[in-house]
Length: 357
Ligand code: SF4
Image 1 (spheres, rainbow, N blue to C red):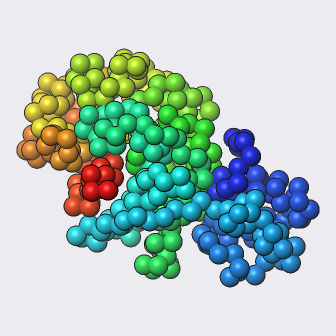
Image 2 (cartoon, helix red, strand yellow):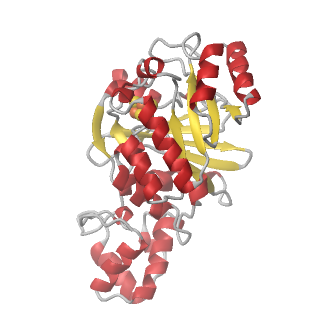
Image 3 (cartoon, rainbow, N blue to C red):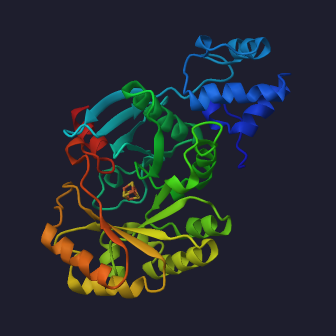
């Protein structure tokens, strides 16, 4: 497990970290499980409602809470928007230092997915993304990422106590691979079967193409799914949409993806935001096929959310684009414009809220 500097947030600690703290204070190691369960699986915020062994109960009373050594990350919900189909809820959450981030809960076919933020703002500046247009503020700590999942878990339980989160996507505000250490540490906590227990294969890290971190994921053989935002089939097309490609070229990115595939044997999901008349032509599809040749790739097509002057792709052109890729043998699916009426595109709710604030 990744080791982190001492922190006062219990959500920053993985199981071993919590156990080390308890044992250092004279609590027997086997009591860790009960506290971890209350913290991570039951998502409790008030531990006085749960019976613990007397030494652990004393420790919690002495050490946990406002003004004490440890606390849980308080997320204050500033706003919540529901989609008209009732299947998507978007939360605007204020962190302790006043920064506001977004978390989205989506429920389809009885499978619930949470989409979390990994940074306040983002340094990558993708032109079609509302968060990118805000600029970078700061990285989130592991505990602030975990806290979003637990927030969604509580909401889900209120809706129906039998429901549980099955999937996690890191596609909210921020570039996850720009905050590598915190993200990997948080995912270790979230996938721990003694707690939240979302399986690594149900967790997708979405990146705009931070090449050194993709290579690091491969070298460390991290078990999570990788989704790469591509959006362009040559340097020119891509750099018009993704400024980060000036730092890590398309050629470098594809070479890192090949290496990742070779080392991990994992399929890579390539995200392609379809922009009408800009990256949905026959020629672009053919270039994309050539680019991804030999990579175990799945291509997700995403019609653009209508922000920043760009418009969603005409479905006819989009479907023709999909057909060409499929005929070349690439699995290629259309991601529905789910939750569009709740501004579920990356950073859109926050962007909408800002002028009003
Ligand atoms: S799309 Fe993702 S990486 Fe690009 S600016 Fe938005 S949050 Fe950052």
